Each structure stands twice: as C-alpha cells, then as structure tokens.
Amino acid sequence: MDISAKLSALPGAKPLSGMPDAWEWSPAPGFVLLAALTSDRRHVFRLNTKDSYDAELCKSVLEFAREREVEAVARPEPLIGLSGFSWPGRAFDTVGRVRPEAHHLFPDDPALHDVVFGVFPAYSVEISGAESVQQAAERYARMLNASDMNRRPSPYVLIRFDNPKTGAGTLGEQAVFISPDYLLHELRLLKYVNSAYVELWNHRNERWRVRWDGLWHATSGGRTLHLSGEEIGAWASEVID
Image 1 (cartoon, rainbow, N blue to C red):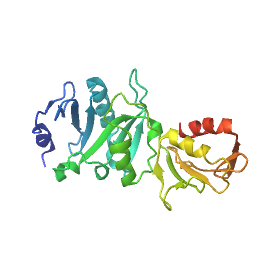
Image 2: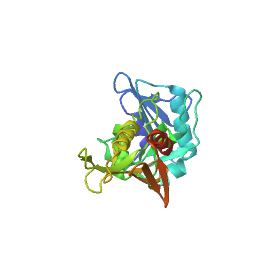
Image 3: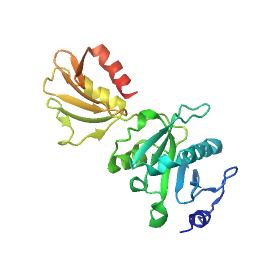
Image 4: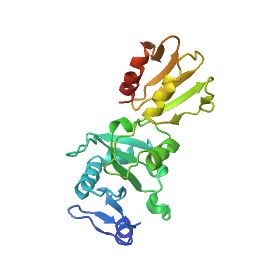
C-alpha cells in the first residue's frame, strides 16, 4: 500500500508547510485534519482539530510524535501519554497516542485505518496507560475533546460505587469514568451511610476505597487516611491531579 499516495489523494489534501511527508485537509468548515508519516513510511500519525486550528502547535505535536515514534508504534496499550511535551502559552505536558483498535479515523479504508495512530496534545492527568480498548475509545472519542486545541484538562477519574441511601451506584464490577465534580458529589453523599463506598482509580493507577464512619476513610495499599468534611474535597483534588 502506498500510504503517501492515499493521503495526498484525500479531497482537499495539501502538503503541510514546513514538514515533509505530512498533509492537511479540511473536510468541513471549522475542521482541519493533519497526517504525517513515520520515518519508515509504514505508519501515520493523525491529528484532528475543530474550531481551534493552530498550525505551529499541530506541527509540534506531529514532530514530537515522530521523535517518539518507536515507542508510539510499538507499545501495545490502546491509549498512552508521551510525556515531556510543552508549548508556549499552553499547559499541555503530554502527547496522547491512541492505537487503531481504539479509534475510527479512517473507517471507510480499513487498510489505511490499521496503520494510523491518533495523536493529540494532552495532559498527564488524563491518561493512565491501563485503559482497555473500550475505555480508550470512550476517552478519545467522547471525553477528552481531543480535537479542541484550547481545551482544559479532563482528569482520569474512574470509579465503582454504591450508596444504598440514594440508590445510586455502578453495576456489578463495572467501573465508569466521571467528572471531578461528580466524584466530589458522591464522596460527600457517603456521610452517615456506613454501608456505602466509592472505589477510585486515578491516572497514576492508584486504587483508593473511600467509606464513611464518623469521618471519611480513604484506603490505598494498606494506608488509611481519616478525613473531615473540610478535608475530603482537597484530598480528592490532590488524588486526581
């Protein structure tokens, strides 16, 4: 397969200025999509933007992915963060990379799809590297808003919980991603419900179990913290940061 020919033949595709073996195209107003070959010309890094195209930032993301291409292509995890990225005026500190099995970037061309890796500017608090294919697809497509170059962080907050008093909880062993605000909401609802719990995983793959028994008790790896109502919010922010 001639990947270069396929990319250059995309409707409206043109060479990306200042970067060899790279293209950009706009399939609809507000959308600018970019792709760059790896050095062996066997794989592609693809970056999408929506209403936020910044040519220099986008080129920097693609160049960074190329610098780390051996790791980006070889690692088997569906979603990883390539640490060490930075850009003036932005707080991004990572380039996210998603494997073909966890994205739908070229659904109409399976051969091309299978050699394409999605990349995007990211924050280290968003990616654990332990995501399943389904979780990686959900994070990339729905939760991270990865095509917005102006976005704020979307921290990795994965929980399993049950609260008999409110009737809210996850199903069986299933864990779900939630927002930091909802995490704090559910933590506060533990008060006075001794049989309730929240189990939390963060981007560092720490596992915490929180329950209430006069105070909030947060346990991880044999260590237990005893937290007041004034302390539980600060603790939650620190754990997911």
